[in-house]
Length: 259
Image (cartoon, rainbow, N blue to C red; front, side, top):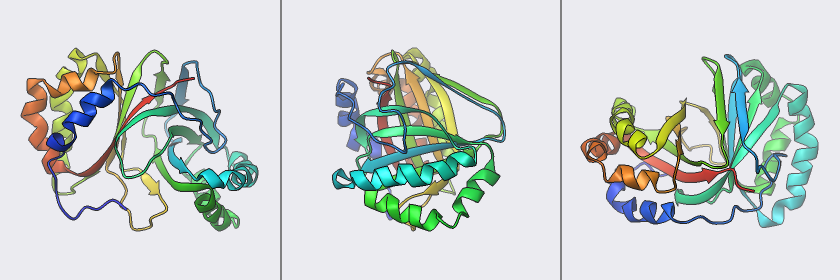
């Protein structure tokens, strides 16, 4: 469970590990995620329409849970797919910079609309599927967001990606927007660009008391040291206080398509 009992200055604590992580290109792990393809060497495009629901699944497997995962795929997926559930693609986690668990991928799925997600969660088999998840994975965090406009994202195997999952202070969450907008010129100079922000997703986790994050932010980078360059910029130094005031806790991952 993420603990929000005290505020920490995260920049000093993780500066060294972020810089070192930029140079670390580990082989992507073997993955088994909700039936997603295990290899995505080619780029892929996420092309969704307003009103559809984007779902991002971030799981950590149990080594002993293979049979449970197969049972989950064989039983849960046909029901979800009958309601329009679709596997869109995945990004491997190349490096976990900051997180309290050890997921292997970000898997992207879609539903045709909110009604379809509600129908699935109302299915009589759904409680059993939730129990099966616990047998198959140490943790499975699922984030849903209904799209308010069309969304088209292309993920390139030649690029690098970061995902920031931020739990925001309700009183100061506007400071997080100020932080992101403030560092954007430095991000662009470092070969990066903001590609997608998921705001206030509906979250499912194994810990019923865990709060949902306020925002999930994806940035595409030309090089693996892009964020390290941003950290040396005047914009970053000028807006780090905005981050500290807005963010109660966060997770930080480097992602790629991999082979």
